[in-house]
Amino acid sequence: MPESTPSTTRPGSLINTVYGEYVRRLGGWISIADLIALMAELDVDGPAVRSAISRLKKAGTLLQERRAGTGYRLAPAMDPVFDEGDRRIFHSLEPAALADGWVVAVFSVPESERAHRHQLRSRLSWLGFGNAAPGVWLAPARLLPDARRLLERLDLSAYVHLFLSAEYAGFAELRTAVAGWWDLPAIEAQYAAFTDAWGPLADELRGRDRVDPVEAFRDYVPMLTQWRRLPYLDPGLPEPLLPADWNARPARAVFTEVHGRLADPSLRYVEKVTGLTPSTGLTSSTGLIPSTGSSQPQEPS
Image 1: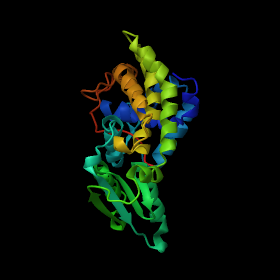
Image 2 (image 1 turned 30 degrees about the vertical axis):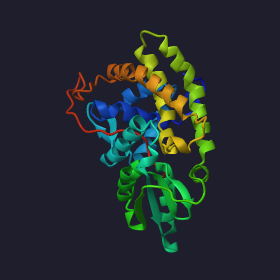
Image 3 (image 1 turned 180 degrees about the vertical axis):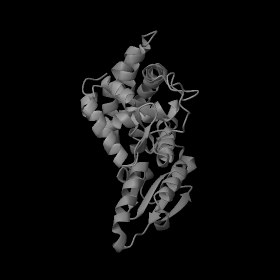
Image 4 (image 1 turned 45 degrees about the vertical axis):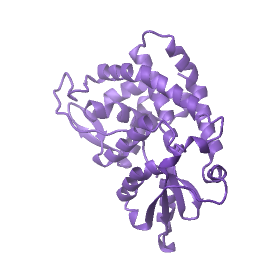
């Protein structure tokens, strides 16, 4: 694990990853004692875990629930957020096709409700939309379902008109225009940081026959925490519109390698610590009834 990763990642972000990647697959609930034990492997101490949990509870991400002991589960309202995260993080790795076209979002918000204007800008940006002009945002057409769900969930749909456009008709060269609508250098900087941090581990894993589960957990959680923001920063623009040396490609290769090697053994480690199993969501000691969970990253406030 890169030495700087744990200390520069907020405990709340690591906890979100633990819930999204493991807890939802193991019944949706984990005891605070087991969570503290897991987080200790990521160099996060008990007080920091409890403080982060308190903030996540206050934000409505987690609900306290007592079973054999005190624990927390994902709030039902987080289900669509985390499900969307799964789709973006694990299934949107390749660039969109230029022939698929664009989704265009046009919004107008009265001055008296300008807080909604800021919310729309931040949410559309978070989804990967680029800003073509004041009140006009666009993204590859495949982001339309995510945009509809987000706007409806946040009660912002009344302010927005969504259009599907098949092609760009002029006047500037589209590749030049796209470079002004998205901050591509900033996205490349994030990809470069990810590759620099985790590329050596990917190379090392290619030469290993076996991965220790606890080591897998220590590496996989911070790696996934760093990665899961990138599919939102990067809308998956069509390849002809990207710089020739677009560095998302090697970063995706690193992610795919590390994910493929560490996801399963790290899950086995979490099962060992918690006593939960994917098939039932039960613990060996209490026989808990399984409950529904959820999937990946938090939306911005």
